[in-house]
Structures are given as C-alpha cells and as structure tokens.
Image 1 (cartoon, rainbow, N blue to C red):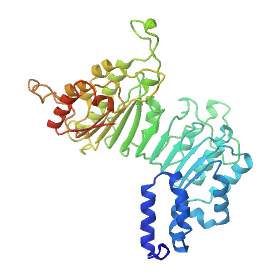
Image 2: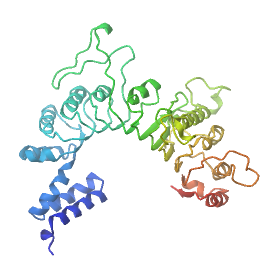
Image 3: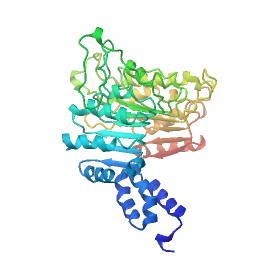
Image 4: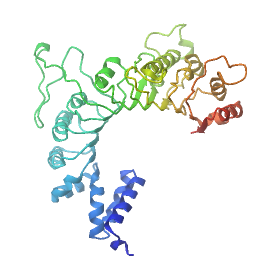
Length: 413
C-alpha cells in the first residue's frame, strides 16, 4: 500500500514511534518536515508533532516566527519551547514576544543567551504568558528567583545558578513586560520576598547547597520531590529527612571545583574554606544518614509510607583543573555503610578514587567467612555501576565473584 494511503491511525503510530526513537530535536525536525510533505494526510498527522517542540536560535528563529505568524492555528500546537537570545536585536525581541504570546499551551521552557538588560522584561513576559509552566531549564540567573515565585505549577527545575534575595532585603517588585523594574528606596519600603509555592517533582540546581537557599526552593516540595541532584561540599550539608518521596538521589561532589594548594604549601590543618575531601565525604555520609531518618531503616517513615528511593548516584564532576577525590577520604567516610537499604541501583562510575578491593571489602561485610558478625551494607543493591578502570584493577576478579554470590549485577561505564 502506498505510504500516502496508509490509514490515519497507522500514520500517527509511525510518526509517534519516530519521535520517541529520536528525542533529539535537531535530528527529528528535518525528517518530520519531510514526512509532512508526503501528502495532506501525512501533513495533518506530522504537523502537531512538528510544532509541539520548537527550538528558536539565531538560525531558525525567523522562519519559525514567520510560520507561526502566517498560520495562527499552529500556535495552539506548541507545548515546549527552547529559546536562545543570541543575535536577538530589540525589534526582533519584541516580535518574538508578540508571536510567542499566542502559544498559550506551553508547558516546558528552556532559555539561554539573552541579553542581561532584557532578562527582567523577559522573565515577566514568561510568567504572564505561561503561568502554568511545569518544566523550566534556565541557564541564566538574573531575575530567576523572582520568576520562580510566579510559577505555581512548576514540577521540574534545572538551573546552574540562582541569585537569591538577601535575607533582609526584598527583591524588586515585578514589573509588567515593557516597563523598567522599580527598586524600593529603603528596606522599610520593600515588599516582602515572594516565596516559590510550586510542588517540585525534580530539582537540579547548582545553587542549592546553601541551607537557606535549599530550604527556599524545597520548603513546599518535601512531599512531592521525586528526583534530586544535590551538590555537596565540605562547607555545606543538608538534612533530607523530610523528603520521604525521593525515588532518585544524585549527590554531586562539588568539592572537585575547589583547588588543592601546592603540596609544599599545605599546612597541618587546612584553613576554613579550603578543599577538604575527608570532610566532604563525612558530609555525604551525613546526608545519606538523614535519608535513612526519613524511615528507610525501619521500612517506613514517620508518615508510615515506605521510602521509594531506588536509585542513588554519587557523581564526581570531571574537572580537569583539580585532582580527583582522594581514595582515603572515600574509605574514611564509609560511603558504603550509608547506602540506604531501599536502594537497588547504585551508580559510582565517576568516582575515580574507588578501587575493586574497596568494593570487595564493603560488600563482604556480614557475608563472607570470618565477617559474619559485621553489619552488612548495600543490602538492597541489585545493580552496581562502576568506572571502566575498576574492571582491570587488581582484585577485580575476586570482587566480581563476590558480587555473583550476592546476586548483584555489575556494569562498567
């Protein structure tokens, strides 16, 4: 049967499968456009998929805006926008807002590269045009916190940094799009800081280590947060005992970004604020213990609901300017002993300081002959992900043999 004469429901299934198999917008859009050119029937099926997810940068912006402007029905199809402000002049910026304001069904937004001078106006435009946003990825920090306070439906927040208002000084009053922000003349004239009231399901924020900031972002999401990427350093620690709904937890070792002083210059005791791997790993253990206080150890938290946490990742950024986290610090902090019993998948592929013999020692507690009296660790782990370097280390064969006896699948990435 010719492609143009396939039943409409089969055409829709073909295109849906194509979109699912090609999550990359850059790889998907040209082919969807070709599908739309097959016939009127294919065009009708492809058009909603073609305009559901739009990426507007300096190369594609003009053509997409032309299409949305010439056919107002297309605006109702848009659900996700990725916006780049690169090479965006004043006239085109106003046109961008005017046309995108018609896209009232937008639920997911990402933006970057906007001129700093326009960000206050842009964030006001976002909150007034799409107050029902569920997903936000923001790679610029200016006015972001103020925007968050006006997105009550937000479920996913991904931000590399957020500028938080000073504790005793309120942020400027949000201004309507097209007007300049107003700044209070004194603290006494300042309106109260608006706290975000969303119910997050996922949070990935590089600014979250500071306890006060983390509390501002998550105070209303303790019972809804499912996925959390939490950067940690030797300077900050968090108590996650209130987050009994976490399904996935990533602990990012932000200490990797702190420079180590020259060996000869290291004092007997590091100054406050200097890199301290041992202190970092003790804080990691403290955070994991606070997760256990959410009720994992007893099988159910204070609410009586068993913890859903199944995936734990400890992520070490590959930052070439500094050395990896010390093996001795990882051993001293006893990361293994802090893994909650509910965790089934443990991802440690980026931890360069882990060796095969460390894994063998940890998983042998309470299991191998002569160590039956020790408290077992990682009791719920079924999948363990390690770095590829571990596979070729001395003791890897013994470690894999132990894992087989413990019914733990090991993969190397």
